[in-house]
Image (tube, rainbow, N blue to C red; front, side, top):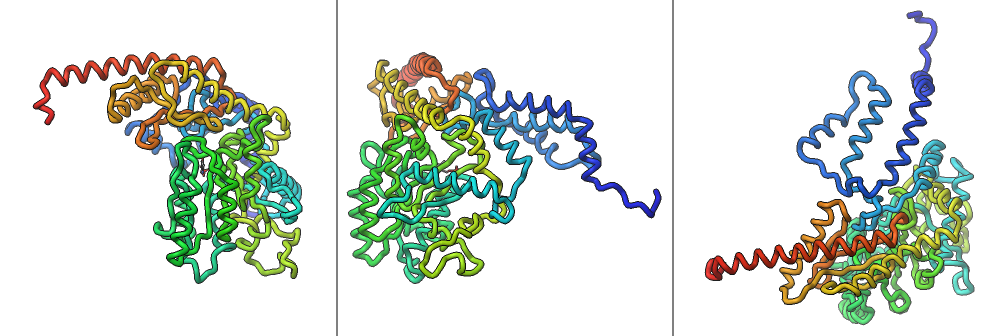
Length: 506
Ligand SMILES: *Cc1c(COP(=O)(O)O)cnc(C)c1O
């Protein structure tokens, strides 16, 4: 080697290697189109046993010498095969993923540019789009500028609902609770609320005794009378109610809390009203079913996930606030010149002044890509479709003998169970648990079971945009067949137990 000439940069060497393989890599993109849309015959849930895990672990670290690129792509397929296909059309558990070809195309564009979305200094273009898109979304949930609220709404894209809730809690604490009152502050969360809210309270520094649980009514909506009662008692004890959390679309039941009544109580108490709309706020973009969602504007902040109902890949949510300056007052740390003497936020507030992250990806632009290509009307119909499929499924259940609704269709979620009568709660729980297991074992559907007021229910969430009305009819038929079989099996086993003789079981 000639010591006088420096070696070529290693990055250029890599570029040349990729150039050589470019036609193969284009084939890889073809293949990814398929993995992004699982077909019904693909496994809903591929678990890993001990042997699989050992083999997966063996792939975790780089080998000393390079591996061929196409081989490593095969390895990626192998690794990702072990997963729940949450974007499978028959995956009804959790909040299913609803990603489309547009979602990952948007991601590819964002990832290739790799813009730094901390602030306009680094990416004027994407920052301008994120700001304007956030304002548009804020107006959709009712945070538009009004006479009473001339201050401009704002917010930012974050990794998901948990972080959005966390940011809301930080802002609520800073806006509504004096520092020396922090040990007396109380947060009110519904008994149906998502656990990320309790987690947020804990991260922000509140003890379990400062998080008060509010009962829900028969529709699983937060009961404002119980809240009012608790707030009054807490005041008598010198505690400071400073944050009320409502849900727009509970994860278990889809229930929507009475936001306007809760907003009145929050105002009377000088408390912050946060709405967790991680799942349900997307109804604000529906064509036919958006009226309720527009009422969220009476809140102070709203969490909203785009990686649930709005077709994005994971890691895309938003926190929206009625008054953008509340975010800056919690997160701006460099000095005080971002707020002018009149307390107005100057336009120079950057995204790093509004939230936790400094370096941020252009999540907003992936989402923008989907929105721009689809257009408002088609997105509206896609959201409506989920709500309508769920309502149609409710009628299918009502038409069948021995099936009962446990929590009626709300947004795109419904809870129900098989109940042939003359069974104990325990026997019904076992029976419905078996139905869920059997559906998964046969790769027919992944549906979660959940306990609602002591009843074990089967729960489905129907937001996958590839799901058809026919799929729902087939699901109902399969469930009914399995339920009848399981019920017969269960009865046969009771009979054999009875024959052994009661005394053995005392
Ligand atoms: C999913 C969900 C969350 C948490 O959001 P992540 O994006 O998973 O962090 C919070 N609240 C509700 C109601 C949800 O459905």
